[in-house]
Length: 552
Image (cartoon, rainbow, N blue to C red):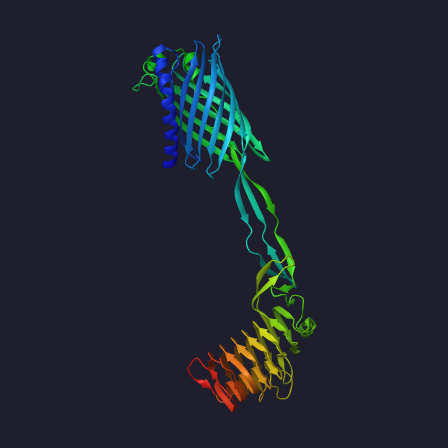
């Protein structure tokens, strides 16, 4: 607001300096019409407007007036505008005044953009009726860029058995100055004599502005009460009270009230104004026109979101998605096998199965986690994979999942419950005779409900270079229960896991079992929740525990 007032003040100062000689000359010559400055306050339902205008007679005869008009306006939304105009009015013998005018307008909108416009208007002001029309013609550049919204990083999501990458669309907006026109008809209410210095008038009109598919159109009504002589104020003072209502779909309903005060310039101007007839007084009526260069914003361009199916990771590895929505637990082992060696398989959902799911060499079976995938266009996104569960009921001494050479099992919840006769030993996961396998961030539970069996979360036997990290491994049974069992294996890394076991007795609750297992450096940060560390035959190295102990 302070900057607006400074800008407006500088403008008026320049006009006043230029108007002073004319005011003095006219006062000395006794001309009818003298310069003045009007100040207007116009609070409204959606914005408040302040305006001042300097009206300067440039040349005049007894019935004709050529004038200059300089206006400045600001509002509460940081918009401001200046208007520089020239006009002519002529008094007809029948009591009507006719006139025309033109303005150069410049506006700074609330978005900080500047626009220029030419305004042309004509008027006929009678004793009882008024007619006005204005045409508004933007010049120079009519548009200003408002920037682009949307966009952003591509996102990835699972859709059925596919992964979709969505690249957001973009929307570009612009602010555009509109060309248009307005018109109104006014009527003097016969509350006072036609020559009285108090008058009440009502006006009905409308406006239309448009360009590039944008339209701002609507009705406008207003009322104005004018006192050309105000008791208690200086000679030539003029006070106008007004109310205005307009509506259009683009800007909605707007209502204003206004107060406009006139201060005349030049010695003797007040006395001359007091002696003018009603028709002569109306020769210095303020020019009625739209207060703004009308602008609106619109979408100037947009791109639709791009949706693509991803089948590769960012590293170029192919992957497939298997969902329990369309793949049964019985079909799971075959679907994983069909993906082939060195493949990446993402599981989604819960699979109930009585068959072993065997990982191929170099294959990764993945549940919950994150994966960076790539679309054919080259866009990449991080897919947050959902949880996946395998509920095994595999008969005999078998696991729900069997690891392969250099295979990886991650982010899965896997359980296996013993079934069938005899004394089965169920494993959630088993890595037997393989090398280079990784088991990470899984929840593994082996459960046995037949007397004499051994339930195991993870069994590593006759294997080498196996990494076990971030898992929860649990054995629950009526006989022996084991969380992690390492047998005749070397180069095993066990880090950041929790192990627990609940068997038939404390001695049968074995969180960790080591039978000739050799552990590599980095086997630390593990926790035993329930159960013991049971060592049948120690190898080399040990499993470090968060308690400070080691096993063995």
